[in-house]
Image (cartoon, rainbow, N blue to C red):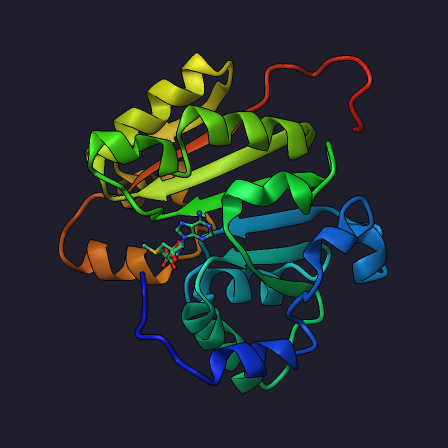
Length: 223
Ligand SMILES: C[S@@+](CC[C@H](N)C(=O)[O-])C[C@H]1O[C@@H](n2cnc3c(N)ncnc32)[C@H](O)[C@@H]1O
């Protein structure tokens, strides 16, 4: 998703109290940022924020961080947040490219990563930019806590197959997987729809979902 450049985006986001301005300074200190010691879940490529806002409302016992590359898109999420009658306090936003995720989260600091309808980057030469390519799985492995998980949804069959393969090659274990989320009563229980999920399922596209867990539950990693 890339919206037309919106000149006021930078200034609005720069003044927004839920937009983190110096995310690298939070590295290793995210529980202090939220002033509460509770699990941290992040969404990478959050778009306009529908999914994360709904989760933050629903689960006050979890701290959420939404990451989006484009300020014009994050602006929409910030505006949506402002329109909330009761603004959830357990939510922060960062405008950044996820390739730098390790500059923002320390080893083992994150409990869950959501990837929803990530850009498919269909050309082979751009495969490394996919958020479920091997290099990203390795980064997720490092920032996740021992029992941390990645949850990924998409309607794109090729991207899903690629993601399964890359997860397996980088040593992840599948906890659950479906090629038809909305037809799978167990996996769909409590499902919160994203904007893209609403759009594509209305067109009749089946939604694929995987939940992957780290396999190295090993020594020296924060629980
Ligand atoms: C197709 S949209 C999906 C939006 C939302 N997750 C949903 O399901 O409705 C993908 C979003 O991911 C963002 N994105 C893609 N690559 C990114 C990256 N490397 N870092 C941060 N955001 C990224 C895009 O700007 C876009 O807003």
